[in-house]
Length: 134
Image (tube, rainbow, N blue to C red; front, top):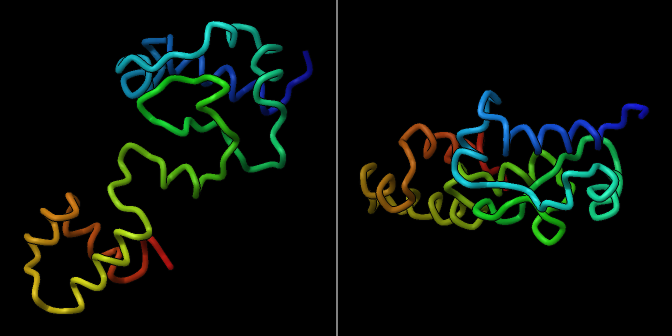
């Protein structure tokens, strides 16, 4: 089979879910994330997902607590994926709220950290527009 980027995405998905030696296994297979048994076949995977609409996209699960299947997957940009990350605590709306609250001067550092469940370093990045740019 000729190499196609979709094949690599499919292989990586399988390894993350089933290969305990894969560097990301703990965040996927190790916490119960698996893939549709139909997707054992690359042909079935392509039949469900299709080829990437354009370069730069990768396979994303819409709900990070569910496995890989046709209903839960899409091709997404890195930026869209960062918003759906299990480590992403803020949304664009929460970032705007955080900026407004900070601007009032009525909230202490620890209150903002507790309210948004993020570190002060993250808050500084949001305030300086280095993260969650409008």
